[in-house]
Image 1 (cartoon, rainbow, N blue to C red):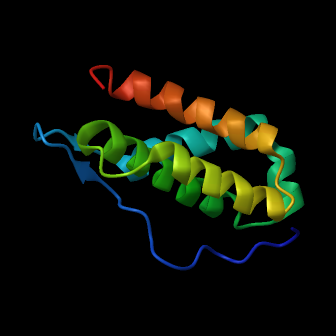
Image 2 (tube, rainbow, N blue to C red):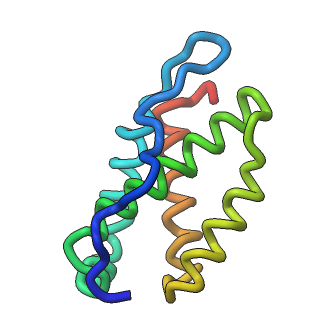
Length: 117
Protein backbone atom coordinates (compact mmCIF):
# COMPACT_ATOMS: atom_id res chain seq x y z
CA UNK A 1 0.00 0.00 0.00
CA UNK A 2 2.91 2.27 -0.71
CA UNK A 3 2.47 5.48 -2.65
CA UNK A 4 -1.27 5.97 -2.79
CA UNK A 5 -2.72 7.85 -5.74
CA UNK A 6 -5.04 10.79 -5.00
CA UNK A 7 -8.65 9.93 -4.12
CA UNK A 8 -10.86 9.26 -7.12
CA UNK A 9 -14.48 8.37 -7.67
CA UNK A 10 -17.45 10.12 -6.16
CA UNK A 11 -16.41 12.84 -3.73
CA UNK A 12 -18.03 12.87 -0.31
CA UNK A 13 -20.37 15.76 0.49
CA UNK A 14 -18.63 18.89 1.78
CA UNK A 15 -21.60 19.74 3.98
CA UNK A 16 -25.03 18.44 4.85
CA UNK A 17 -28.22 20.20 5.84
CA UNK A 18 -30.10 18.28 8.50
CA UNK A 19 -33.89 18.16 8.73
CA UNK A 20 -33.86 20.83 11.44
CA UNK A 21 -31.94 23.19 9.14
CA UNK A 22 -28.56 22.73 10.83
CA UNK A 23 -25.69 22.74 8.36
CA UNK A 24 -22.88 20.32 9.16
CA UNK A 25 -19.46 21.24 7.77
CA UNK A 26 -18.54 17.66 6.96
CA UNK A 27 -15.33 18.61 5.12
CA UNK A 28 -14.08 20.86 7.91
CA UNK A 29 -14.78 18.36 10.67
CA UNK A 30 -13.18 15.54 8.71
CA UNK A 31 -10.12 17.70 8.01
CA UNK A 32 -9.72 18.50 11.71
CA UNK A 33 -10.06 14.82 12.66
CA UNK A 34 -7.65 13.76 9.92
CA UNK A 35 -5.06 16.33 10.98
CA UNK A 36 -5.27 15.18 14.61
CA UNK A 37 -5.06 11.52 13.67
CA UNK A 38 -2.08 11.95 11.38
CA UNK A 39 -0.29 14.21 13.88
CA UNK A 40 -0.38 11.22 16.23
CA UNK A 41 0.57 8.81 13.44
CA UNK A 42 3.11 10.43 11.11
CA UNK A 43 4.28 6.93 10.19
CA UNK A 44 1.13 6.59 8.10
CA UNK A 45 2.27 9.43 5.84
CA UNK A 46 5.72 7.84 5.60
CA UNK A 47 4.18 4.47 4.75
CA UNK A 48 1.45 5.56 2.34
CA UNK A 49 2.93 8.65 0.71
CA UNK A 50 1.91 12.23 0.00
CA UNK A 51 -1.80 11.54 -0.57
CA UNK A 52 -2.34 9.94 2.85
CA UNK A 53 -3.90 13.10 4.26
CA UNK A 54 -6.22 13.40 1.25
CA UNK A 55 -7.41 9.80 1.67
CA UNK A 56 -7.85 10.15 5.42
CA UNK A 57 -9.99 13.26 4.95
CA UNK A 58 -11.92 11.65 2.11
CA UNK A 59 -12.75 8.53 4.12
CA UNK A 60 -13.61 10.46 7.30
CA UNK A 61 -15.82 12.81 5.28
CA UNK A 62 -17.75 9.82 3.99
CA UNK A 63 -18.02 8.33 7.48
CA UNK A 64 -19.31 11.57 8.98
CA UNK A 65 -21.83 12.03 6.17
CA UNK A 66 -23.05 8.44 6.63
CA UNK A 67 -23.36 8.97 10.38
CA UNK A 68 -25.29 12.21 9.95
CA UNK A 69 -27.62 10.74 7.35
CA UNK A 70 -28.20 7.66 9.48
CA UNK A 71 -28.91 9.66 12.65
CA UNK A 72 -30.95 12.41 10.96
CA UNK A 73 -32.99 10.47 8.43
CA UNK A 74 -32.21 6.78 8.72
CA UNK A 75 -31.24 7.14 5.06
CA UNK A 76 -27.95 5.26 5.40
CA UNK A 77 -26.98 2.17 7.36
CA UNK A 78 -23.86 3.47 9.09
CA UNK A 79 -22.78 0.07 10.40
CA UNK A 80 -23.05 -1.51 6.96
CA UNK A 81 -21.01 1.31 5.44
CA UNK A 82 -18.35 1.03 8.16
CA UNK A 83 -18.20 -2.73 7.62
CA UNK A 84 -17.65 -2.15 3.89
CA UNK A 85 -14.93 0.47 4.54
CA UNK A 86 -13.16 -1.77 7.04
CA UNK A 87 -13.15 -4.66 4.56
CA UNK A 88 -11.76 -2.47 1.77
CA UNK A 89 -9.03 -0.98 3.94
CA UNK A 90 -8.14 -4.34 5.48
CA UNK A 91 -7.82 -5.90 2.03
CA UNK A 92 -5.39 -3.11 1.15
CA UNK A 93 -3.29 -3.78 4.24
CA UNK A 94 -4.45 -0.82 6.31
CA UNK A 95 -4.44 -1.63 10.03
CA UNK A 96 -7.97 -1.70 11.42
CA UNK A 97 -6.73 -0.49 14.81
CA UNK A 98 -5.68 2.73 13.09
CA UNK A 99 -9.08 3.02 11.42
CA UNK A 100 -10.75 2.56 14.80
CA UNK A 101 -8.60 5.30 16.28
CA UNK A 102 -9.36 7.66 13.38
CA UNK A 103 -13.08 7.01 13.90
CA UNK A 104 -12.75 7.79 17.61
CA UNK A 105 -10.97 11.02 16.74
CA UNK A 106 -13.74 11.90 14.29
CA UNK A 107 -16.35 11.24 16.99
CA UNK A 108 -14.43 13.47 19.42
CA UNK A 109 -14.24 16.30 16.88
CA UNK A 110 -17.93 15.98 16.02
CA UNK A 111 -18.87 16.04 19.70
CA UNK A 112 -16.74 19.15 20.28
CA UNK A 113 -18.14 21.01 17.29
CA UNK A 114 -21.71 19.67 17.27
CA UNK A 115 -22.57 19.21 20.94
CA UNK A 116 -26.31 19.02 20.25
CA UNK A 117 -25.75 16.17 17.81
